[in-house]
Length: 316
Image 1: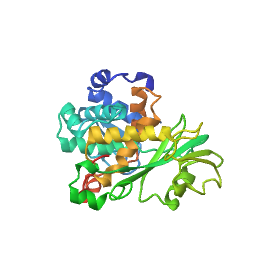
Image 2: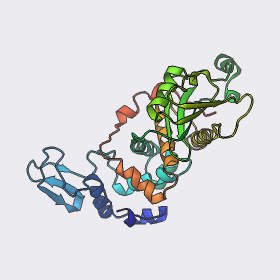
Image 3: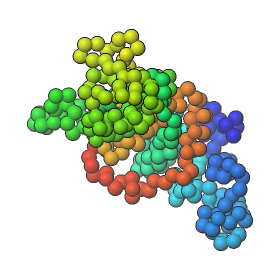
């Protein structure tokens, strides 16, 4: 299937403009063994309603499509629009805004926003492989810039590193390999060390800054720290790789998405981590990887907007 994929966005738009092609492609993704089953009764006697791109179970008479049981379920939009949206978000280095996607697909900004979040649900890292070799770990703070705050607000929020009221993202990156990131509640040892031990194989070399919370990683790892107050690099001891990832994340958040609700930050982190981890692949391979992950996942609008009143963060 990979060899049949278009290789550029222009080719993708042309290729997936035919709903019949989209439907056949989605059926192969949903039922790779070729055995189509009814989502209601599990029956395998399935007929086709070709004019509507639908399937019908001959046992229980249930009508369904290949969208059922995927992030596309219950969407009135055709797969031709969905596939182009997947291609765009999977391959745009700094992401794509809902306004831009809405204009490109001819849908409202609200619809495009919902589409993007559903695709991000499929972009979550599903690997259980632990990071090995040389691994860097660090954290970053996401929140409003001090210079954009009113003086009274700035005096209340900015203390020390200015991390008060900001969201914290902790991450690890395997040099030459993949990144693992998550939004955390704090930077205490109980939080960051648990994340490291969950994602990094014992015996690996772990590089961090001099934050006291990382003290103790020497039990189980070769832990080396760099004090950024004195220097940033000492031989192979540095955190430049993970810092580079933070710059990519903040460029997407600040340049493309502008303002992000704290409740949704985890999804934007997953999106950037996916593109980073698949950076050595082609546009077609990244598109295919996302499609392989759409099955068995669901995100409803009610769940997505449940905590939208949590406010928005600018990016620093």
